[in-house]
Image: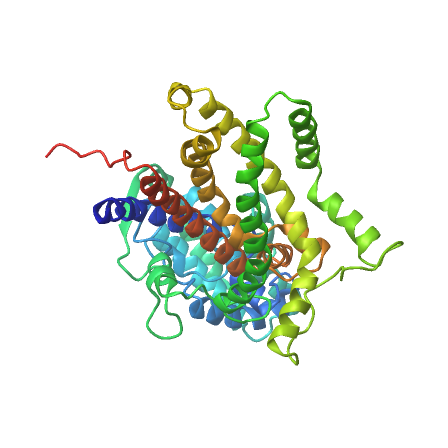
Length: 459
């Protein structure tokens, strides 16, 4: 058994590595700039504001390790330098990338950029706002026609070094370098490495539980998600526990009466209940039972404040608040699992070993309890793995309808606010619990049916 678990854990390692790598890649492709979002500013508010904003933006990028290469190595083209990632301003990188495609000579492009940037940050005497605007637009020029337009408006008496660098760049173009691939090795000083292992100072790294800080509240993501998970667990554990416990006897009850009027009626009811959207039923429960237009039996929103209550009073108060959301999360799982149990039990009832046991005179109740029940429950063990992530992720719609600050609502709010560290922290946690859920299913399946063994590989 220990060898089986050890092998399953070994198989999980590449899966978890792939999950972290995929999550990191997706985080890089999300719209918005982390440093920009954290500063709550933009560089598009004009030349003067941009001159003041860019240094602060560069410092923020350095704090977030965005001034480092993305991965341990990169595949690029010969026209781009291996330090291209150090250019802090996104608009400048886009402009320089287009220059590289057009001219390919990075030393001359870098010289032109340095002259242009120096002239913009330290304008000479006699420069006016019009010339400063020209320099600003040259730094963010998006096309060749736009760049040519602004170059013509630059005053050669004040910005001669800029024009000289531009003329030299045009005369020494080598665009053929864009068609030669280049592999660049960056070492461990890269964003992915620090994301995983931390920097030993301000960040501990993902492997030590540091998921970063929220762009919106600047709190640790681990603190935000841990409090949300505790709220979600209060709902999902009760709902799924009741669903698994009650669905097994319900499925067996229907299976032994398969084809009867009672079976057809209850199966139709279960199917109709399973087809009912949880958010619609939750709204009806609030209207009819939560103080809407009818009865006021249950609290419709939130989980209530239990800070100043005794243990038993707090327990009863919290359970009373959980009735409606737990039911809305319980009934889809219960109806699905009951139907699965019914189908599995019917298959077992018609197998030859059941007929052989009946021929030996063993009572039907004992056959159902000791044989059909165990064998028909095996699919439930497999389904358990797919339900484990639900325990953590919760149900977004249920938490929104009942205003419960659980994992689902917290993740959705973070997505609306473009608070990506919280979003990707939730994705990583849910993915990890998905893998652990399937591991738990494998272990329980192995315990329930010892005939399942790990296939020994040839040595």
